[in-house]
Image 1 (cartoon, helix red, strand yellow):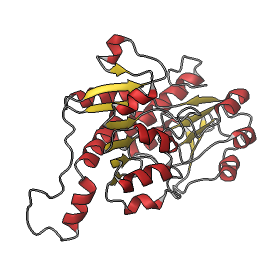
Image 2 (cartoon, rainbow, N blue to C red):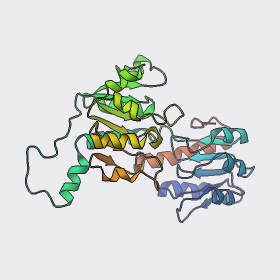
Image 3 (cartoon, one colour):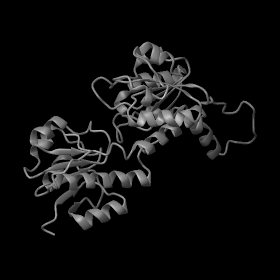
Image 4 (cartoon, helix red, strand yellow):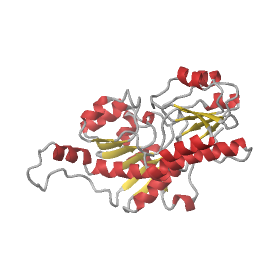
Length: 322
């Protein structure tokens, strides 16, 4: 066992991933699956070659600088890296590996589920049924909005945004997008690029956030941008919670300026979510389950371990960020 690379695994994983970890590595496992704070991670990281973490364990500059010198890699079960100080990791010579491709299809599926659920009032009608209030059918009961043939604005046309666009075409939605760069025509597949923000938002009866969290994207949904959306627009967030100003979105949901929202991600998740969302019948909410599909989660873990093995063998690591 002493010849095997040693990995600190901060959360519990699917059986197939844990079986490979236990077979191929000297594993320090967090059996209780309680979220470890920075001090606990630093203390348990002594003598390890890699950390296998999730978005629930943020690693800031101070934490990374306190990690043992022998640490070679941080493996994060996520496509995003906003919970890791990449600059600090790079200065320390610590490789950071992510799971960019493994989450794409599963996250796009959740995006479409939220889009449909918000548009067709799934939360309201489901709650009404479960509460025992449904006594008769009515032509005016829980009338929602069809998505078929409607315009969908995608903010962030990366892997997930492109896959959402492909799924949306199955509903004949008219896709347009705003991105850091305009995509090549073959990649965009007739999706319309908007360089101006006002035009993009004004055309977005449905808006899906798929962009990473960056200084430029944080707070993208705010009072001013909401004002540019059509009245009764529907907003979906499968990106990161900090793309949204909660005060602005909640006010718009209450006023009806935004007809409905479908949210998978939140500011302050999980403990400090703005609980005002819970009281809004037009908020369709799920608890950050974008990648929570067996195939996706297994692929994520395997991708990280494949990448770490390539790193140890001094081979190219496609999913290495720094």
